[in-house]
Length: 258
Image (cartoon, rainbow, N blue to C red; front, top):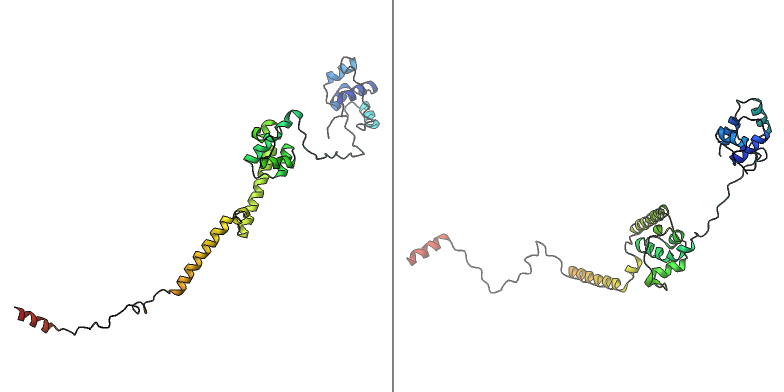
């Protein structure tokens, strides 16, 4: 609450005309200079201003004015309001856009869709003050004037404030991060459109077939061990093992040849 009356000069005019308060008392209560109050009393200031009764408006009481008139050292103080008026509720409605800026909305929507695709339609509607069908048409490039629409920053066009845009982008980033963490926890990192695509299914089927064939081969042909490594080596039945030759036989043959 303000420390002075709602209409300072009008209140000062009434106090000068209807009380015996000093110029300093009136000036301090109305947040004016004493010379301004003197000019009002002389008729040089606040000409044409109609006096405002502070008693009727509840800003002063007759007792406080009488006490200040009796003692020049007493300062006037605003009286406490007996009735508290609640603040008026602001009705939230669609953002008003001047007529000169309404043709720039498609350009701003295209800019938001292009550079901030994480924003949902409701956020774009709140920033630009547009409709959902218009956003959908620009996203799908089915707008009737899509060939002539150029992306322009809505802040530069005056359709929204930079703080509002930053807040919307930050909120969208938090939402995207939560969705990513949730997808990781669920084990579904790829989007639905990609995992349900025909090419993706075909690659998965081909991969599963290759893995199945490898498993079959491994089961049929077990890896050899040290015990059966030489079991499958074919040995000729006609191969005769040579007799043992001693050292004396070798040297005796050598002497015979000489």
